[in-house]
Image (cartoon, rainbow, N blue to C red; front, side):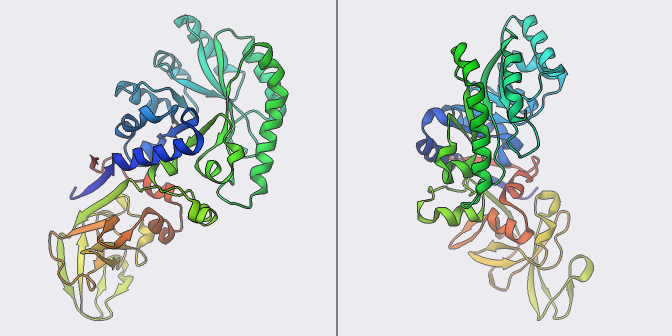
Length: 376
């Protein structure tokens, strides 16, 4: 492919340092699931592990890839683990999330006995996000069951928030209170065993907007990559927002520059007709390369420090842009799809606005096949 992604390791470390300062070094866990939100799993993890109390992934495959790549930091798998991968998880010294006392816990104990070691688990509580987790009233029974199993070590108890991106969010307080009630109910059991599992419920938005949610650990995801969790979060923080730096840039170049006559259609379906004679640049990146088709006739790239609108439909591997504002552009001229060129910036947030989605989706859906270059 012509072009690709550039990831700033210094920006990642800068963001990680700010987030650690916000909550304390022993409380900052960094989430690198989804190919590190599109930034590249292993290079991102290696760059950040010295700053992380934990690294969080979603799949056991991600955790095993990190171990194979030399990452030694504590790892927490947030998602379900297939039974056939339990042995590998224990061999890799990975912490697992559990929300059932049934078959999975039995298999985990069997594997732990076979390996003559204990399995570290984080017990998930459902506080009305209504996806994974024990109901709050089930937590005492679940913990009692786990405590009867000597092969298991309760390393954490956690939940997840549904609406923390909004400053006026009664639901966030409802969830936190439900979690705290569940923790209070189970506290005597843990105190009898002199256990202090990590309590965690906050991700990036909650940690910035709701300090009371920070507890023992914060799972920082989107903010780690220099992006705010939502426009509402940015507006709520205003001047107090941390100085996060986007770590990812996406660049290509013009492969064809042509003049199109007034009235001529451009791209599939004739969705755009030139209002006048105009120069159009062809960029060899399309929706197979992470450019949402929803940017058709809405988005823009940057050429020679100028914002150049997308004209016509984004195709699988090509996008057309209007070069009117970049009269010196020619074949080989650099095109910034995401990032800064001079005073002009197009960010993942802009793509998200044009595509009517969120910045999480924009960066995490950038294909793993895209070339990634890591720079300091």
